[in-house]
Amino acid sequence: HLDAQAGARRTIAVPFFVQPPAGRPQTPDPGLMVSGDVVGKSPAADSATPMLENAKPENGEPEKVHACAPWPLAARVCMWFSYAQVIASFVVWWLHGVGPRMDPVDQVEVKQFHRAKVMLLPAMLLESCYLISSRNSARQLKLHGSEMSYLVILEYCVKMTCYSTMAHFNGGIVHVNLRALGPVRACYTVRYLEWSVAVPTLLTINNYPLAGKQPLSVFARRLFPNLFVTWAYILASWVAEVTPDPTLGWALVILSFVAYLAAIWDQVDIVLEADHNVSGIRFKVIVVVLKEIVFFAYGLVYLLGIADIMSSLSEQMFYTYGDVMLKVVQASVLVVVRNWEDLAELQMALTRKVETGREDRRRLFHCANAPIFAITEEGTVAAWNEHLEKVSGIQEEDAVGKNILDLVEPGCREGLRTAIDSCWGGSSSGAVEITLQRQSPEHQPVQMLLALIEQLGSDPIKTITAIGQ
Image (tube, rainbow, N blue to C red):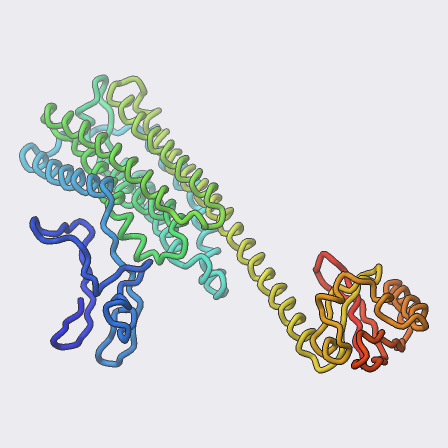
């Protein structure tokens, strides 16, 4: 916002879901423009005012601000469903409370929690070692960012805490699943608490590789509706199982699955909005698709358990080992992505160094205050520097493509040919004397002592550089 009277510049952050009031014109102020992720004043409005970058009046040093683009329709729908689920779940809980506790708890199911804890520990230690080692490498932290490692560690800690609680405290807080159509089965509240933290964290880890160069703080704003609706349908699905009112319970089941469809819609939009110049973009999209397939399987098992098509033990084993295997597979995928990005970064750095070296050689070649030319193995002129143009009268475009033997006096050709062959053979014949042919009567014959140097480099065409005196 530009305050014309005070001449001050301010930045106003507007939430994504706030829409302009009815009747207010929505055309942008001609004095403001949005370019990429920087908000600023249009040069057409005031050429003396630079791009607005969250100016700090106290010290005059601008700070870059990322523009808050409005959420697409799918994200707004996710927000609506999130509010609906949260309000409905708390209303149902307030009116009817929760059902009875499960007693006794199936000890076979509790044993699965012990095994899950043991399976998670090695992967958690491996990720911790990566984080510790990467903190000693500024390049790795700059390339990957430490946020992802912290999020992975957070997810491991949540899972370890929850499975340890369920393993050592007889399942933790266990209610009867009142929506189950068959025999009595357990609803492990601690598992839903774990999902409410671990699943949004997993979504962040899974989607952030699509963000390109966006900071996590900026990308999280776009991802927030998906995270919120996911947390809300986990809450609704738990309340649906433990509420004594069957009508409201089934309504929450339906609402949670419709919200899950909205989350899929928003996930598709996030993939379509991704930076397609990101390295390994196809692989990262495939990882997102696989995540959605796993989430669909979780929802299907939830319904099969309620319908008594799947036994309680099978349902809990799927959830338990699904959580563990999903985490281990995710850790493996992160390793692949990190190595992929490391190799891509290394290749880009090597390419930049090669291009810089070539440019330095080119500038040295053409700007040197000495006659220099380059020839191929057959003697064809490949380059002809500016100083040689001045002293010989032969322009580069006239020399390139011709055989160097055709540009020197006949008496010099045999010695030059011998020197060229010796240079290609790896031995040096010392300096060779040549005389360039006169191109016009006003040009004097040019005599030079040449030193021939075989090129060492990665250029596809090998040449000899001849430096004259």
